[in-house]
Image 1 (cartoon, rainbow, N blue to C red):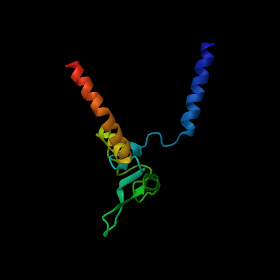
Image 2 (image 1 turned 45 degrees about the vertical axis):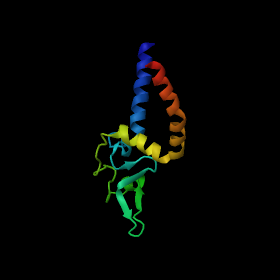
Image 3 (image 1 turned 30 degrees about the horizontal axis):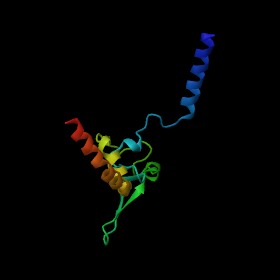
Image 4 (image 1 turned 90 degrees about the vertical axis):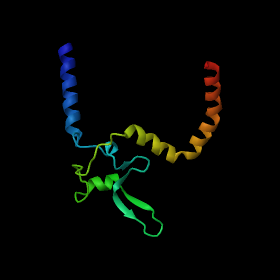
Length: 117
């Protein structure tokens, strides 16, 4: 019975690894150039010279184009500050919610700190 279970698990693992391609390629979400709230790559794009607005390309398009980053992610740089960038983009995307929550929660945090002291 135990041998059949191991055989089934071995087959499932092999089938899964057969169908999943690009397993060992770098992931855009771990790159320092990736903008998570827009799925864009800050390494590729244009700047509007009149408004100074940045128009970045979609990360998927950049990875499909071998002249840019390509499937092998030749311009990939590991994001060592992901713990900062993910909350940053969350707050940028949800400014109103962030301000509302902070204005509601700050008095309660102050009250808790006052009670603890």
